Length: 241
Image (cartoon, rainbow, N blue to C red; front, side, top):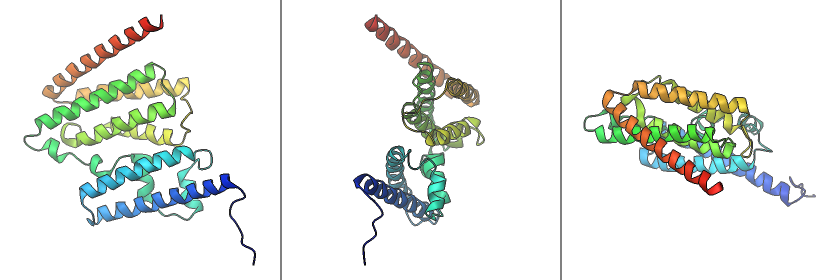
């Protein structure tokens, strides 16, 4: 009986190998999410493994954008029932522990942790907005910045921000949109303008939601970062001219 091969050449074989890797990542993430919910793994073990799976997924998904434009369709084609994995890998982009880590910040004695978390959020907001202003609008330029911002907002938790803070939702929506594009794709002028508007409005809402002490620290950080960016931009222009 003649053996039937799935591939005709090395390129197709590599593609099917990548499909198998993607399938394994999705299945493993789904099992990890269920294990975490059932308290079968510790938070630290879950977070370490989840971060690794998310990093592997982003690398592989970026390489397969031409052949796997939709993760949902891939899961449907290969009969993968993995809603938790798709949400974690494609929509959230951060471990559940990071999303829900607010106890240390909101509990007593967490003022220094709160200040550090606020500083991180301010830094990522300003970096993302300035990058869009400087026309750094390729997906592989924008996505890491928004991912960092999403992670920092999740770390802040609900201790200082309301649980329904719209900025979190807007950033997650943009991450989901970018995940469906190719790494070298660029935002259109209209998309870039909308992204900057969403970031700016979210940043203003973020500042308005902070208590007075946190707001003062955040404003100082904001001024320092903007001054630093102005200096760096001026030096770059002097070098070019």
